Image (tube, rainbow, N blue to C red; front, side, top):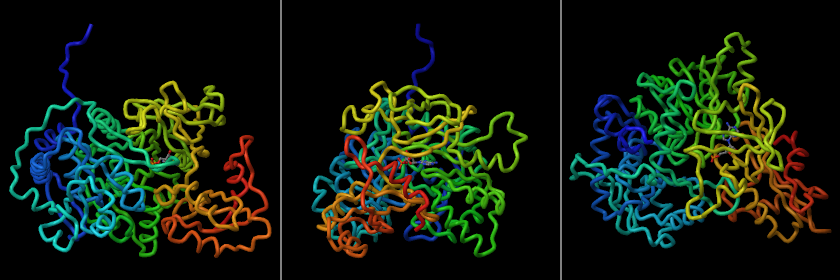
Length: 541
Ligand code: AMP
């Protein structure tokens, strides 16, 4: 027997409607490419969201069409999120830091119809325009003058596009399982893979993230998401923050600038922030150098990479800020675990709490976790046994976009294999101990070890090449290249680095090249990365 409750679909447009009525005077403050500080209210934001939705409709888009964005965190990007997804299209966020081949691949694979770009990315898009010829046109996210010097065809500025549109829009009553967001991840090998979010997952995830034991977001908060809107929907913050009506502060292109971050935090009275460890290092260094304290920030949610203990202590000791480590993935919308204290932990010592904070957090309702051994046998949560970390739940991806059956390929029984190796303690706190996926995460961005290896193998003096990540204070991890020379070849570090130059992205360049006699292999002849990582565990850059 069905219950007798209304069958209201969970749609992101309902956040617009709710927040508009309840939080209309709440502020959104942004640094943008052309303004040092832009400030307006939720009400003005939603008027412009509706104008944009009207304009997009007039471009002739159909339900499910992909509209891509390549932009920093600011108010126009936020508006695009709601207008595109709310109107029934799919907001495909592109990471501008990827290199051109990947960007071309993603735009073509997604079959993006329109591209919305920050003015500073015009030169980048001009260079690749001939290779993304199915894109119908470009919207430059600036004022009417922002398109004047471009060679792009069919281009219009954001402000010109929405100027004469009505600020009323009838949101379509979509199926809550309809797609509304698309984000490619290069966190696995091969071509980037698209994760296609739907309304339902996004809303459920937003409910989960605002909960007290997760991000604990409320109307009284002021949120500074430094995590980009092109990284897994900025960890869902646009939805969670607007659901509760929190003040939002965006750093625009200045997200790696300690001074800007510090000033925004102080002047706007930011209470909670979100980002990867690398950006917080920049902020903490700026504060230390200038003898400054963060006076309003209460907690910071740090994820995307392991948080060093020294960072947790610095935030605590010098700024009285509580670090909540979180773990997740693009494939998980992204939240899987968040650190928060449990009942009965009131008497833990300071060091015991710090030890908890260095773990990746505990599971939230909505994500089931398990760890399994090589034979898929489930391992106990005893804080000792470690194995492949697998997850499932309503905001975990079931398949990659246009790669049927791919996401479930590892387990075959409905779980998603994260590629992380973890242990879980009896209280449910999860700790990543290694990863099975062969990639390196540097400053929150993926580097493909395999691609560097394949490129290096093109050098005539290289018999075998392996790339592993080693610890780095600022970037968390940096790649080093380990090479076995062709017999009698005379080749040195500089030869190899010069050979790689121009063939891989600059920031992928290995920080060191090390020559060894033999690279360890598995029984099937693959490079044994775990053994290699073990061998270089104490390697200092
Ligand atoms: P992405 O899809 O780019 O968000 O990357 C997800 C991956 O980043 C995870 O599978 C982990 O390998 C890594 N990761 C995310 N959060 C953490 C964390 N708190 N500690 C360690 N690794 C993390």
